[in-house]
Image (cartoon, rainbow, N blue to C red):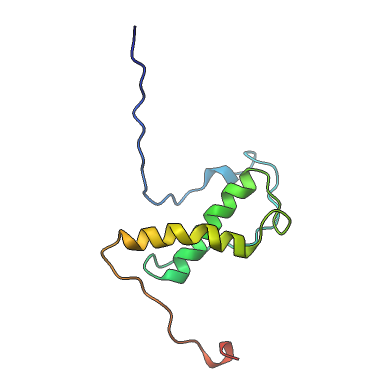
Length: 107
């Protein structure tokens, strides 16, 4: 009898190339609720939340979910928050927070 156990690698590195959204690999994607950022600061809480929200939305879209009908931005935030909390809990660097906003954004 042969043992065919496979070794699963749990790689948590950042994947910067999402192949699931390449032409021909999926049906046309509905308009997203979260615009994936082109650049982010991994120690900035708000940036990391948006990145994780976009990743959660990728999974929902891949499963056939329809934005605004099947999920909202708040749903994405609630799903992303535990990931972000865990990432900062395991990180030696303290998280950074935005603490000042331009005058036009405070009104």
